[in-house]
Image 1: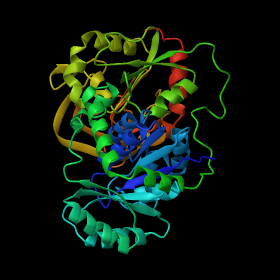
Image 2: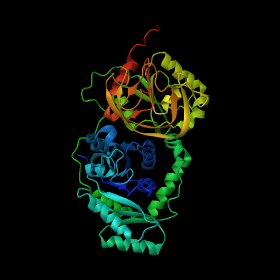
Image 3: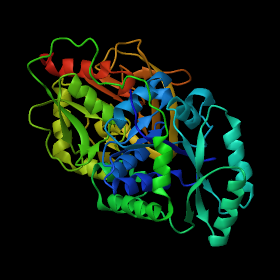
Image 4: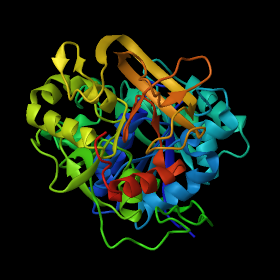
Length: 456
């Protein structure tokens, strides 16, 4: 059973300020020495990373498409264990779904599964009494949804606030706070830096989150919000665990697995490190921007999908580490690279030399490739046997030529084969969630323990 006070923060659509308010709430409550946890609906590792920074513990994604709807509540229970408050930041509008599956993949569906009250953040800059009709409509649209109240954003004046509160009081919707137009300024590092500022422990990221916490603490009734969160019923579910249900006898040797990251975390979902440790690995963080050598005794490398393409120059400049990574791969040790990690293994990116593990060249283009893919493994690899089907997420501006090697990693409907399998290397811009595929960790650790094959 999981009895964690919680709220889901959502909005009528993107752009209402849900992200800034979420960070501010977590930072403000953490400043009270209340143990808190942050979650993001959907695949967005950047938002999840900042939620983790605000909470002081790993931020996690809750993505029904990537992990399956049945794992959402267990993963929440695992990530919220031992806390006094959990916040789930929604995605897009409350009832929206990228693939048109709102009944299972929207923020509303996640809130219903978590039996959590929803607080709607509403940008009221160009709105008066109509706010009551808007919020009432969102409350009435789904009988199973528990809309607990609203937080008003971009309020123009005290008179404007009084008008909005009166209108919402008429329809019985509590207002937990009202922020003026200037009180949530853009204080975080540019999004093009991805999870980098959080993972690297950059002062600008920490300072920005702290400023949002101060703004929310001054304008939101935190005590009333906690009363709402504590009214959420207990969840009678077994928390997700990285420990395998049918674990074989543990090996006396714990192979060192290098996990790309920085002083404040990894470029992978938090569950990756947990699964690797449960599978018998000693996980050691490797900073690809600063460390010039692999961890001592490293027998495998994992580069998660949160590594930003923006740091191409720094990755290229770290020649000693590039050479070490190439040697690790050449020796037959397992290397898994997701997202932009694939570009790091390429021969070059926009003319900059990379690790040269893959005979391919990357080019950054305008615009982003974003979306889910249901993919089938083409080649047996350290990630999966051929024929295995996974759902992953792609978000990248750079493309690789060729798109796939002689032994591709994946294929999916409507697209050509993608990715590279070479010896024990698996590299692809597709990012699955390992919690849905825990065998990946077990396969990687087994490969790390296996004798290195003799050169042909």
